Length: 345
Image 1 (tube, rainbow, N blue to C red):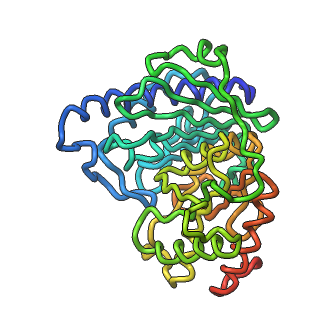
Image 2: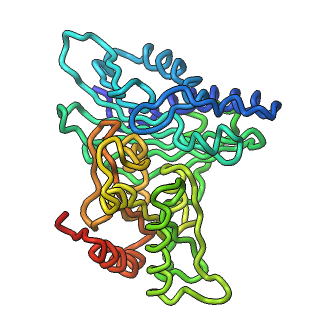
Image 3: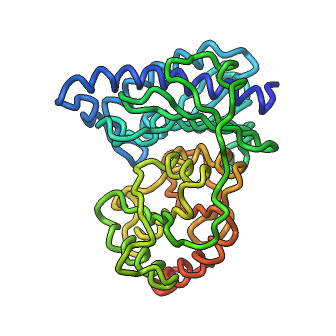
């Protein structure tokens, strides 16, 4: 049976394989103004699949297929694997041993236009049946997928019992032991407990829920005294859940709020009528983010968890520390209550 530590090596290597392929695609596409990687090819798992997403899927299959027997049988749940997002590896007559949740490119829209890094996200958990969830994960990684001009990238990895490890390495580096034996980079959320001259973002990357996001953001700014003629509270709409988590883990952001499933509920949108939301595969890096010291809850202040599937809408809040949470969370809960959603929802 593979240990959690051994799984971090394996997930990191898989992330590096995806990074290699994605980097080549982006650098080739950067020579042309046609943005061929931005061609939409499918609608799966509540999100749109683009040409760049399809470009890395074969890489994953090849890499996983040569894993040792102790990795199987394994059920992979990921964006882009059809309507249910599932693919089984190993003997179909044997009971499942592992479940893996994965987003090969979290931040596709940023990367396919060569604007900003995307992230490879993965989590592994022993099979707990259909109830397997993020809280069952024993290992998790985030690997940066850089833009074409970038020569260094970061990787974050953690087990359920250890602190998050952070590494910066040359994009040309493909040797996992070399990366993990190298000098770690500074890691840790900010200790500032106010919002002055800091970043707080209410996710509003796409049309449909932006008015609600803006109203909540203004409520937070007003209540905390951060509406001034010279801005002291900043916003960063990073179109990548993994990227947003990294900003918290590395002390750059003080709070990130993604309430899109609750916004959809306020708007009366259900089932296939929902505006785009975060899904569990977008949260596959959660364990590594939590082990960095940042605090994560669902949008109602409860423990954050989600099943290993591709359809569940996930609302979440990330706080750099307990002081930021104590400052911001009551404002969020009151705003939600004002819109008919309370902590018991």
